[in-house]
Image 1 (spheres, helix red, strand yellow):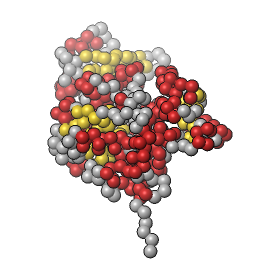
Image 2 (cartoon, one colour):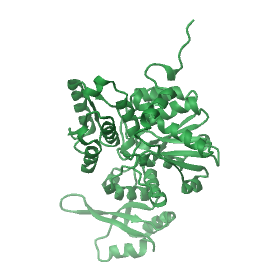
Image 3 (cartoon, helix red, strand yellow):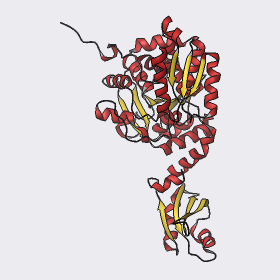
Image 4 (spheres, helix red, strand yellow):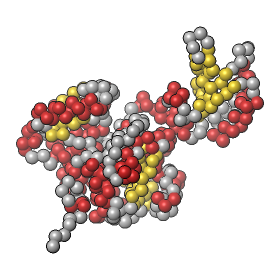
Length: 435
């Protein structure tokens, strides 16, 4: 008679013991990140909310954990051949930092669209151990170049998420949460984890399955890139037909095979719920994190705490319970903040766009300002569109309301004016003109 192994003990799927071994590897080079109380989120949600500050690692994200675990676990021959990866963001920085600490050479492929500051950051973190190669216009081009290089050179590819070692390394986040919560006398009812390729989620559920199975896991995905929910519905990883790239650290078309298997196995023990978070709410939370806690979070870094703001019904933890949200990264490009503010205002109902056909007569715009707009409303965009090369069309007008509740009154004033007004909704193709 044979006894089947539990899923977490089958070849290819890590267990809690693998997470513990990863923690031992990481301990000398990557200090634990703090668990920080959030009075703002606690008051807003009714939970006792704590933030796991992965934005405070040396590379400002948790990605270094998985990268170092894989690289430090290589044998002497593999170390000699070196490693390679393709990335446009945090994973490249994690690999560069890990290689510098482990003394392993790396060739890192970045697409041409990677901002200069990120290229420089990868080179600085890796120092003489890292060669940065710019390959193609998009991530897929860089990934193809990386695969060709690995085939020709024998270098080991370090995956961003779909690898047992990466999963074990990312699982050390959960191990730290459990230890830090116990030391503080806390008993978390739930952990909220951002999801892209699901490496962090797989590591978290793997660890909790064996060490804290009573802790619920809320998996926060961008609404425009919900690859985990699609995989769970299909019974395995599937390609999304379209991905919104705004939450770039979690905008993954297809979650990994290893990560999916680990999550699917853990679901038999750990309670798991998925949450699709609107990109606009992510922007609202990014701004609140900065203004209230002084945390500069990238979009993926704000996913977890944004998700907690919308959780309801059977997925919601008990009122007043302790909840931990993982702030997964802080590599945000400051030039994106104008877009972040715009999306936040639209999500909150403060910003609206209209196509307005003004009569061709003097004073038409003045009457719009005096008779249609409220006293606390403001025009933030005014641009004429063209129907053809000879004729001016309606004006695209952006209006920021002093109070989101005044939209109805504004629409009523528009209706009784002598103007033809069409609201541009966020799902309209015209909305791409302003975002």
